[in-house]
Amino acid sequence: MKTWEVFLKKAGREEFRHVGAMQAPDADLALVLAQESYCRRAEGAEMWLVERDHIVAAEPSILAANADKPHRHNDGTRIAEHRRGVRQSEANS
Image 1 (cartoon, helix red, strand yellow):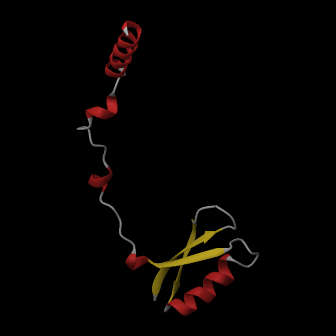
Image 2 (cartoon, one colour; image 1 turned 90 degrees about the vertical axis):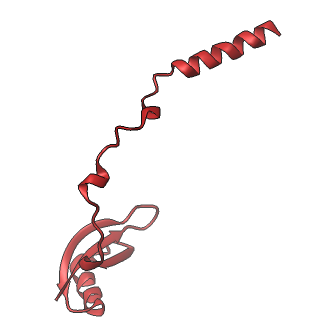
Image 3 (cartoon, one colour; image 1 turned 60 degrees about the vertical axis):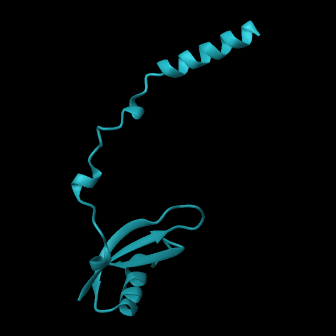
């Protein structure tokens, strides 16, 4: 048996959402079982089934914040100085 993750998307611009997981021996039966289990009342307009073995999980170290990005901690002083200089040069012209 393979484990399948089920994602549904409502009509319109909604995003796909994980709605559950199930087991089935192949993709064809997984589609039938997912439709019966998760779409009985037209909860979604589109459905994805993803075999769990095909999911790539990121290591926690990849998701850790990178502290070596000083440009993200700008306090605005350089921009303020630049704008002040531009205003002064326009005023002197």
